[in-house]
Image 1 (spheres, rainbow, N blue to C red):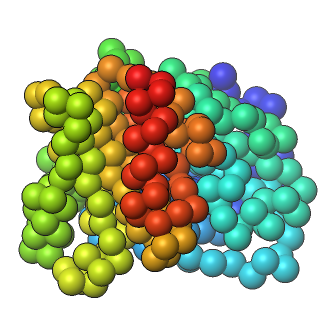
Image 2 (image 1 turned 180 degrees about the vertical axis):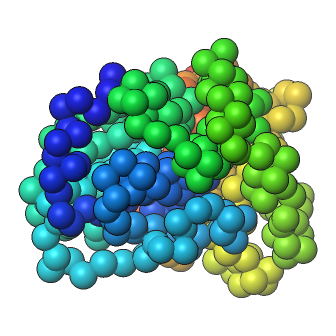
Length: 319
C-alpha cells in the first residue's frame, strides 16, 4: 500500500485540510502533524490543520501542532481533505461539511469498523495505529521521514499501543519504532511528555474516579462515571478521563472495564471501553460506535445512569 494513486492529487491540490477525530488523542494528533510535515517536505506546500475540541498540553511538544485550529470557516471549499485516525465520518463533527464539499477526500485509518468513506481509502485494521499506517505509506512511497515527522509518528504509535503494552504491539511495531528512533525520535523525551507531566488536578481527578468504581459479576466487570460536576470540582479537562478504563482493566479479575463520561447532563454520554478477552468493538457498535477488539468507544444519548444500564444490558447479552 502506497500513495501511488493519490500522489498527483496531493501534489496538485492548492488548498488542503488535514483533520482527525473529536477529542483527539496521541495517535490522532501525532498522525495529523506527521501528515502535515511529510507533505511540506515533499511538496513544499502548507496545509490547514484542524484539531477538534480541547487538546491536551501533554502534546504541545509535537512539531506543527501550534499551527492547528479548532474550527475553520465552513463556507470554504478545499481541493483535498485528508482524514487521519477517523473511524467513522461522524467523528469529525461539524467539519463534515468541509469534508463533503471537498473536491477529493482521502481517508487514512486503522480501525476495522471504518467503512471506507473517502474517495481514496488507506485502511489497515492490522496496524496498531494511524501512525503505523502512515509510517508504512511513507516508506512504501519513498517519502522522506525527517526528524519532525519521526517524532510525530513515534508519538502516535507509542500512545495507541499504551506504551508498547497493548496486544496491538507487534514485531512490525517495534521495527517501525526502532527506525523512527534512528531518524531522530527521542523515546525518553516523548514518553515523558506523554505520560509524566500530569497536573495535580489530573491525578486527583483520576483517583476520585477510581475510588468510586463499581464492580459486578464477581469483579469481572468494572466501571466508573465522570459527571460534569466532577469535572467542575477538580477543574478537569476532557482528557482527564484518559487511561481510567485501562486502570480498571488492569485489575486481576476484570474482563471488561468502561468509563461513562457525561457530556451534556441527562442528554449525552461518551463511553470508553476496554477488555482483556472480549471484542468490545462489537458492544460499542450497538450504539453506533466502534474501535478495536480490546479498546473501543461510543456515545449514548441518555443520562449517565441510563447509559450505564444500556451498556450493562448489552454486555450481559453479548458476553
